[in-house]
Every structure is written in C-alpha cells, then in structure tokens.
Image 1 (spheres, rainbow, N blue to C red):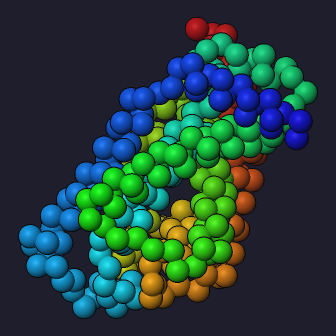
Image 2: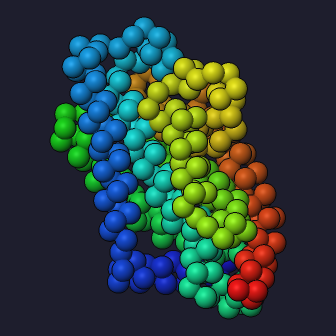
Length: 268
C-alpha cells in the first residue's frame, strides 16, 4: 500500500499544473442543463405538481430535489470514472506503462491513489454544481448525515469497482472515448439518475440492478430526500458487494489487458 500516497501526490501536482478545465466545464454544463430542464418542465409543464406514480415510486413528491441529487450523482460518477478508468490508458499513451509494470508496486494501491486524488477534485466540482442548483431555486436538505457519509463511501467503492474493468477494456481495445461514453449512456438510462428505475422495462431494470451505482444512488437519496422509501443497510450491502465483485473481476483481467497493450505498442 506504499504506492497510494506517492500516486496521490503525483496526480495532484499534475492536476495543479495542467488542470483539465474542459472536462470540468463539460461535466458541470451537463449537470446544470439537467437541473435547468427539470426546473422548466416541473414549473411550465407539470404546473408544480408530480404524478401519483412518481410519488409512489420514490416515496416523496420533491421532483426537483430528486433530479438535482441524481444530476450531482451522475456528475460524481462520470468525473470519477474519467479520472480512474483512464489512468492506465493515459500511462500507456504517455509511454510510462512499461515502466510502471516493472515496479514492485501492485496495481490496487496505485488505483487507490488515483481514486483518492480524483475524489478530492470531484467533491469540489459537485459542490459547485449543487451551489448553482440552490441558486436556481432548488431546496436541499440532509435529514440523515450518517447515511450521507455512508452513501459517499459506497459510491466511491462502486465507481472504483466499475472503473477497473472499464480500464482493462480500454487498454485491450486501445481506445477510450467510445468505451467510456457507452458506459455513461447506459448508466444514465439504467441507474435512475433522473427518473425512477421502476419506469423502465423489466429487462432494462434488471440490468440497472446489476450496477453498484444504482444502489449507491438509492442510499444517497435516502440521506438527502425526506420520505425516500429505501432500506439503507440492505442497499449499502448490495452496493459494496457489487462494487467488490466488479473490482475483483477488473483486477483479474487488467494484467492481460496491459500485456496486450504493450504487445500492440511493440508491433506498431
């Protein structure tokens, strides 16, 4: 685990010198657009009311709060995946992957260092999004602070777990944009960021249930939206179990993906 802190420090130094503002602006714009469109639809189309089916599915009628929490969670997820899943393919593109593989450090401590640095940056970005949403008139509360902390920890585990297999796929395929954008689109549709998953067809809903982010989002809403009908301990357990399973699979398939990337580089 000695590689965690040096990786954290190195990535922070790189971030301070060459912060990817385009990622920040693009992701923040997406979150603000989601909240803004929901606000307009709620007031201009819905007349400030929600359907009974929404209340039954979510346990409350706070549509704006529901969408804002979902938009913040989607921002958190996409930004963390952009940092963590692209770490190895960035090493490959910069020509440092081979040197990394020759070091005695294991892959998990390195990825944990990347995750910790990404977390410190992403929390600030999400805070900016939430502040902007409050400025637009959205009212947020935290009725259960302990559940909120647990939800953030579970979300971090979920994102790390999903990022490692994605990193392996990126390395094996030799590209990042199509792979990561496919995942982002699937999560946006399946995980319930902007609408209850109960609205989905059964097949799509079950696909969403297999993603740990879905469960982390439920705990997050239980911590921030009064009346949310969620069994927090069960949702946390499922989220952590799925995140650990994804992480185990990712660590298993990452070494072959790294070897394939180096072979492709050597044959180029």
